[in-house]
Amino acid sequence: MPKRLFLALLFLAPIAAVAQLPDFTELVEKQGPAVVNISTMQSARNPLLPQAPNLQEDDPFYEFFRRFIPQPGPGGPREFQSQSLGSGFIISQDGYILTNAHVVETADEITVKLTDKREFKAKVIGADRRTDIALLKIDATGLPAVKVGDPNKLRVGEWVLAIGSPFGFENTVTAGIVSAKGRSLPQENYVPFIQTDVAVNPGNSGGPLFNLRGEVVGINSQIYSRTGGFMGLSFAIPIDVANDIAQQLRTSGKVSRGRIGVVIQPVTKELADGFGLPRPQGALVNSVEKGGPAEKAGVEPGDVILRFDGKPVASSEDLPRIVGATKPGSKVTMQLWRNKTSRDVQVVIVEMQDDRNARQARRGGKPPAAAPSQYGLTLSDLADTQRGELKISGGVLVENAQGVSARAGIRRGDVILAVNNQDVKSVEHFNQMMGQFDKGRIVALLIRRGANSLYIPFRVDAN
Image 1 (cartoon, helix red, strand yellow):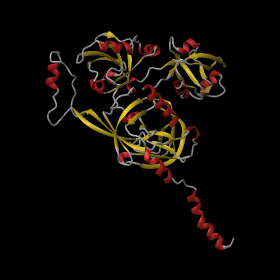
Image 2 (tube, helix red, strand yellow):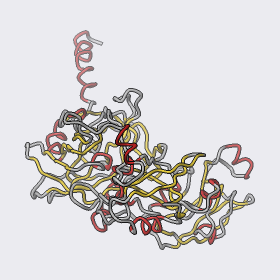
Image 3 (cartoon, one colour):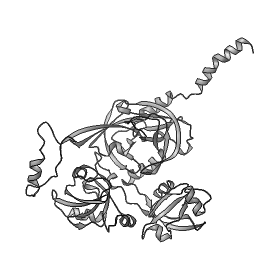
Image 4 (cartoon, helix red, strand yellow):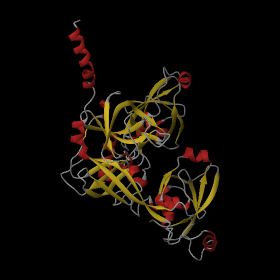
């Protein structure tokens, strides 16, 4: 090879390598204006001060708490304002915005800032805690909106880009690749997450994940971190999941999900061999809700669900997503594996207990005072199998506790057994019982926490 030709090829090699790297500049210029900064203000308790229940002066415990728990002085208010930051993006020119539910769920006031420095007060149209999606609305028109892509066409190894406000640094752009698809995370059964190595940090939550065509394919939602900062593992909610949730929130203010009443577990290789399955697949049913849809369809403990409504159940993580996305009232075919043979059964889907605390269709992101999620409690009815395991006949499960409920000492995972020694039978029954008390009345809630029970004084105040 002539020396001049060799030197020319040697000079061009780095240029060719650089040419293969993506250029994000045009994408950021066109799509960046549709990304917004979201700041929230919320009231919080002063953690340095001890807390006492709000009691009437004629209560026998009033004098005790007054003496031994000091009241806040002029320099130490119990309530103070805290601020948090997140990201979002405009999905329609008339001001609808998608973000994460956890960005706005405790907000008293929400401010949306555009890239042109305009600021708007936002209201929450609705939020769904199970998928971590919230839909906001600002009073504006002619806004830049994102283009929506198909996350199902994403390929592992494909370049993607995030825009957001990590640590409050607005309109920060980071890039990486798709690391995996369809990830299941602990306590997150309804989202097949997109895993990336895009640098995502606190403040990026709710921001968009773009493909190279400038289309939104996901909403950056979570990171895996031992330090609180980016460690190479970021997770985004697929945009098709988010859009389905947003449409339901926009039309009805809530999300409707299906359920069939089974408790499932993964099928290991050893279990697959024992059941005569050719490979580990499906969802193993370890208990069936008495009187539930699955029992009525003939499902038994030990069955393995292989297909649901024509969709394969590759692993146990797939079933909650598929069932949850099925319209309540639908009658679908479910393929089971029993006694080393497959069979089809017909099951009628019922509606899952909705996440009432996520029905945030009022200004400021607060649920309406008359809604079932008053008192800052998100409750759900216990299945017969759960009551059997706890050896109780009634009670309601606390899925989340905020505001007055959290300050009273109620925690997520508690089971409310009784109100003033009257047994609680269901969420509806609990709300009826609490509605009979005058505002400001102190009632005694009997709580089951783990293996122990305790009474918690609770002030009946819907605010």
